[in-house]
Length: 162
Image 1 (cartoon, rainbow, N blue to C red):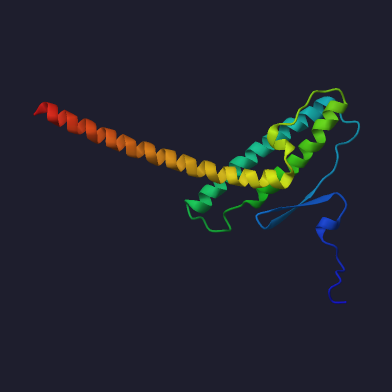
Image 2 (cartoon, helix red, strand yellow):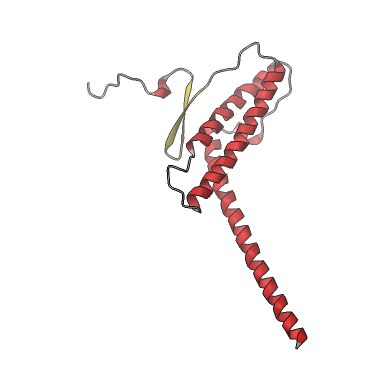
């Protein structure tokens, strides 16, 4: 009897989706748009949700920089909010595209929107981390190359003056 739960988990409520990313569970409530919503509002909602995903990607990248390179304390690094926003936006996009097409509009899924939500969120985290490393490597290599070129030029100038 001690194993029986009196309070159901949030994942058991109607309209709530549980998404696990890197060992963390995110619970997102989904609700369909109102049936009489105008086509222009649906299209604006689709664009807004795509913008939310792009902003979430940028926030994930910024948080990884804080965590990996600036050694920020754990309470400063916030992966939860951008992940929650991106999950909600991804689910909204999956509802909005068919509704827009049903109402006579023209909307298409972009490649990442065809993935399931868990896969997309894991890809977003991986892309954020890889982008940071690639940017760091590029800047370090260009600084080293600039120093090397300036040293060679200095050496050539001293040889020509002698």
